[in-house]
Length: 580
Image (cartoon, rainbow, N blue to C red; front, side, top):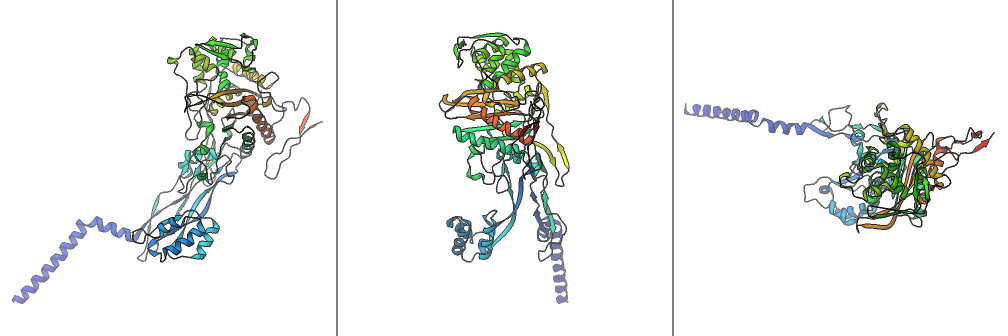
């Protein structure tokens, strides 16, 4: 009896323990156990994203993707770290000590260590032939720029982790990598994935740029030749459609190869066309001239006494290169008279002059779709002194970017509108469908008559008696302005012995197809913008017009016929002209 009671009690107690335990597992410890079960039967997989392709305006590839393999190791599986380190360092070029340190972590908890990312084909083949235990390969995507350094400051680059650094790669990062994230896959007890048919690779959207590969090549080739000739510290060229704001070419020197950006320091990767600030010198005289005509402060033919060769204002003396005598308003810009420009600005007055400087967009970002654009600087009107207006009138006391100056002259070229520059024309889906297009915006800042007047005035600059006859091209009239200014050295707080030398203009005068600025800093041997930058403008413009098949202004008057041909790459050759 006692024995039966004992057994019954024991069994009942055992069931009670089981019930309590089950209750604990089901009610109190449910979340933890559920998560553990999920981790055993489910696997979280990162969806790889292939960046979208970047094309030029004619559909030519500027940035693509290559599939490459990366080497990793499980240190706990490496039998002979020293032997493995020696073999791998001999193939990859890595330091033996660095490899040995990574493969000798068997005492730790790491089962995955990167050795070298994105290997070359030869490296992969040699390493696979060695087949050391504990090592493996992972497929990864590497960004590749087929034209090397061409348009590198516009494109930017992508680092080893597929993250963008600069250019449109950075500005449009979310567009180029529009999909991604993670997906949960079911797997069986052996770890095999049960889910099938899932897309584990995503493609980003593609970009079509306003850049033309052919025009970019023309600009960069001319820039390289001039850099060698003048031994300049740096240089920039920007070519733009003055009506739409499309950037057709943008180049800087020094430059870099986005396929190997580590070889170049930050200065080489800097997009100086939109980031470098400088005092523009005489190219800023556009503000004095246009504001004077717009406000009625002067009229065409108004005479200005520049016979002394200098003018005193605000306790300072401002000089011309040559004594010019008494000259009409137009010649102030043709001959780039500082004395005349200061007189013009003083007739306009500080308040109205300053308002027009703001109208042209100085002291503000242009809004171009590239990262790190500088806004430039205008002095505070409330803090003007006697020297502020005369200095601004000749391009000192202000800080601008090359793009801001080009934008201002484009307003004259297009009939009076301030445009928004941009480098992306379209966003395409992975299937090639147009998601969005960009046409730019514009705001009228000048009367059409004022713009027409200055088209003609600026064309005098490249004619006999002007400061930039070397910027002229055969067959088409060039309108523009030279600029030469001393470079300020922030380390010493004084002006250095170096200069910025620039030319900005548009062509043809009456129906401009391109507007362009060329800026050199620290040129050796010559410093004047008409001598240093003018010929570069001329060379680029002539070759660009041959490439674009733009007719000469005198083609119909002289009965000329274009006989240009096309090479295998679709690039127009040098134009030939025949008289019928």
